Image (cartoon, rainbow, N blue to C red; front, side, top):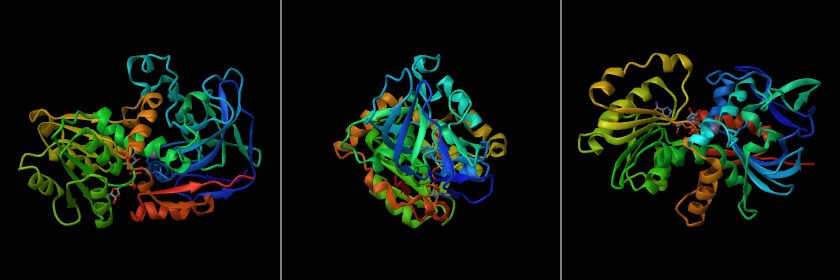
Length: 369
Ligand code: PAD
Ligand code: ZN
């Protein structure tokens, strides 16, 4: 099959057509990947911010149709439509049974770039190819653990279902699960990309009535308003902390979200939170940035809570149906997140668009022969 492969850090992606895919092993399923979002975390693997072994098939935001099941699979059947979860959730380990399936202990295997047993089902020209997040949705087919799929109704378009797999679960989950947003509360969101727009709509659904969007690009701030922002601050036009203070009666927001992954904007998120407020870190920074944050004293003396947010603190098996209900009722925008649909040959252009900030999400729609 043909798929987009990252050969090594800081190299362009290559579309290779010599990829062989093994059959599903026990507890695994073969998915015909219909659509895959292009998320900043994919770009972060390319530039080394998120360290994963290469060569690798990137892509962790996808949806498709189950084509074959391995021994012992009971969660899904052939023909089922599924959202792919970028964290497997076994439902049995310590964290899964204590309300934190987004930290499933089985997901530790992902760092090795294979499936749960550490090996991969893909080869290119005979050599193993890794799979991002036990998935690899930049290929038209994937062998994935059954605990990485969530069945959805057949009438949900698979391009928008794909976005649920990362950006929507993460962003909306950050607002509804990770944070404590009070009805009538004030929220600031720094970074209005594919994930940040979902934080904004999650904050609206949670009942926040002042939602301050911060970005450098006027086009993103316009989109932020469509997703629920009540105020916008262009970070390119002066100090964004002062902008958020001005929009929050000089107090700062009850809850702030950093959805970019940069040191300066993480410090802004801490400084924009009111005394006693909450700071939710969603963007994934480089390790050295995380180790060198300077804002420690302000959050200690001002009793601010800093929370890391992984996968929107989601329970995918419960949250995917909830998000689909919100979408059906018109409260959650999904189609509006898709700026461009592309074929896999245009993946490097999609990365360039993401870096330039001209898209909310590009979505790869795969062809299958
Ligand atoms: P994106 O590239 O679509 O959006 C980033 C946005 O930030 C763009 O709109 C930029 O214009 C804006 N921006 C950049 N620099 C600044 C600045 N200095 N001030 C204000 N705005 C700025 O990315 P995304 O939404 O796909 O991903 C955002 C982050 O979230 C990224 O770090 C990704 O790796 C992370 C992520 N985390 C999880 C998780 O589980 N925590 C899941 C998925 C993605
Ligand atoms: Zn992602």
